[in-house]
Length: 78
Image (cartoon, rainbow, N blue to C red):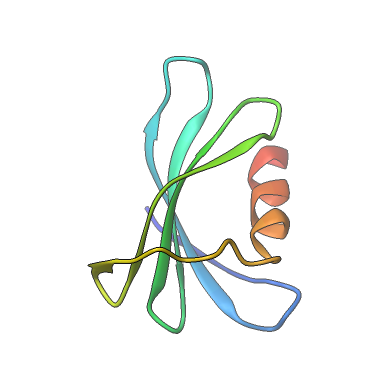
């Protein structure tokens, strides 16, 4: 079930758990209000790997926003 959180920049992002990884981590979709979306793998120790990115539903080569560390830190704590 997707969850919405506000990051320190004031924007809201939607975080959706996609699957559990074999190494004990998890895969998440993180969608910003402006239509950008990142699919990330988050390891048990908090390391993040971007799997793929989209803009408005189309594959795109997006930079990783600074606030993504804020989101992943919260996910590791849960």
